[in-house]
Image 1 (cartoon, helix red, strand yellow):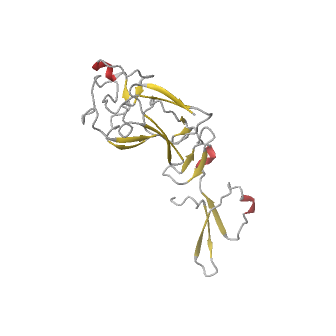
Image 2: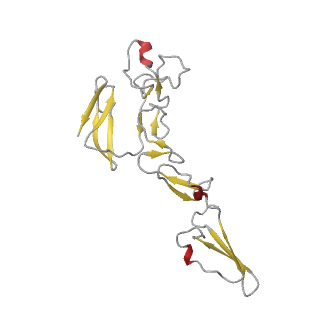
Image 3: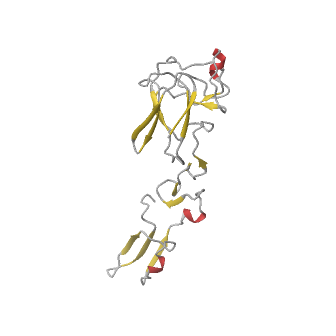
Length: 209
């Protein structure tokens, strides 16, 4: 069904002998099911509730309807994915699937390994994956050293993370790039407002309250 609020139907004969079909937003599994009353000569049919199997993980809320599979999971803060299985992570070890991209600067990201090392300049990365707009090594089988075909400094674009909650008084970034704030920077946006931006002449870690 397409309408999520339609979860059961009543079918019966009217006094004129015509069939009546009533659409309901409650079923025998709804919290208010005890308020339902039987109606003579009517048949009540409820949908098979896909949420009864508790498909959502990590305290995600299952909502029947909305999607082709018959339900959707509303994930709590810190988790994402169809079933809320995936913890929100910003280290790029699992790709950038949850990030919103504009422009061409990040179309070959994330980058595997220390790709610039093949050009005699290390990225000083942590882990196996990172984001470098000038790089083009989207998987391990691609030879190291490749750069964005548009040129190292030409591509433009943005890469925005999913929403996350800052627990505590501090947050740290590891960023490398240029020192021109109008060209390369990282931004911290809270409630759709830009609060902090960071630039770096060389890779370094900066913290702020």
